[in-house]
Image (cartoon, rainbow, N blue to C red; front, side, top):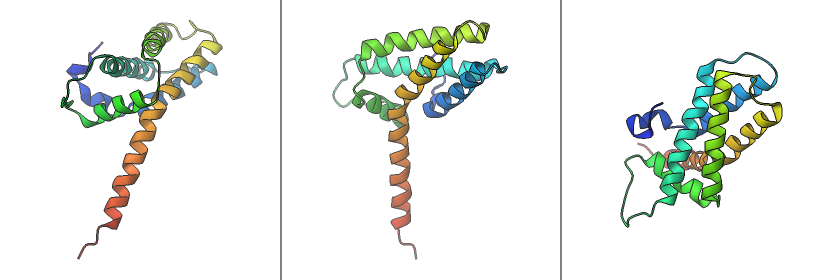
Length: 149
């Protein structure tokens, strides 16, 4: 499994990774076959979330800036959502393990467990999705207000 620092570009959109994973999990619930690559996106998402949670835990140095603005914004959105960092870290590790189990054996978890994975991924990525959506709207509005000519 790749670490975050090796290829941060693959984590540019955690909401998309969550959507793809939730759709794959919904297909598993219905008994359909799912490509392992779709579930592996969930593992990548969990790795990214664990990295963000560790960033929240670590004390920040005044004036420190992360290399990628999206990661900084995601960390801020996650921190402002008011999550319990220790519980989120433990739950994310558990979800990552469950998704790994599902990649190996699609029938390894019950429908209730799969439903709880979906709910967790949606709830933890929602603050990041909201942040990115409002940022996109702001940028679009600023472009519309520019008078050219």
